[in-house]
Image (tube, rainbow, N blue to C red; front, side, top):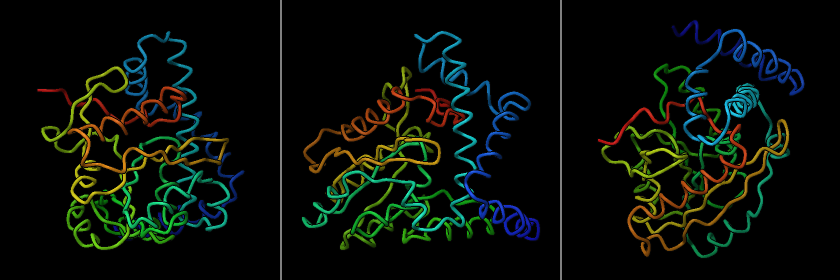
Length: 289
């Protein structure tokens, strides 16, 4: 297994990552045709998710969203491969952050940040680069990969630009460890919760949905400012991140209000351009008991 992983990484992924973007997007175009027309990848899941989220749309509109989604999904795949070797200058030229002064404001006030976003546009680039745009110490949460070789390589890739990674099992420990430093911790908050019994249930995209409230929990526990990173796709290979204040007074809000607020921002983005959300995700596999 280790030998196979080694060859896959050094003789396939890294050579692909070194290719220029125009060539990578040719691969994306071929992958789109195969995944959409020839070997449909989770197409039933994608279509079902879109139908249930937008019951007012016709079948032709649902199909159109799905088709655009698969094209973006394939772009996202090659862009994620590019992260292995992309330079700092190239990444920053393709990911524009609007309003970094908001982060500087809270740094000057000696307030740590929680940065929430969703599986929208290119969250991978946004997560990798969070340390490049603000003065806070960047912390990121990731799901460990069972393959130890690739887990190590993914950690190395994601902390290339200064982000300190913690696994999902180390979150409480990390918050306590860095509580006396000015940090910004990234949360991708629209995944299906691991423990549904501890989730907050709410209406999201027309469906009863369990939402993780980890960002709210730690914001209140450590009195941290909560910002939402609104990632939008400007054009192929170019994205923009704009931070919106969710709250800078977390303990003044009612239970679950922070979770509701950032989920509504995510929902608004999805409704505006649904093709950029991760529709292959089995987001509604859990039902309220």
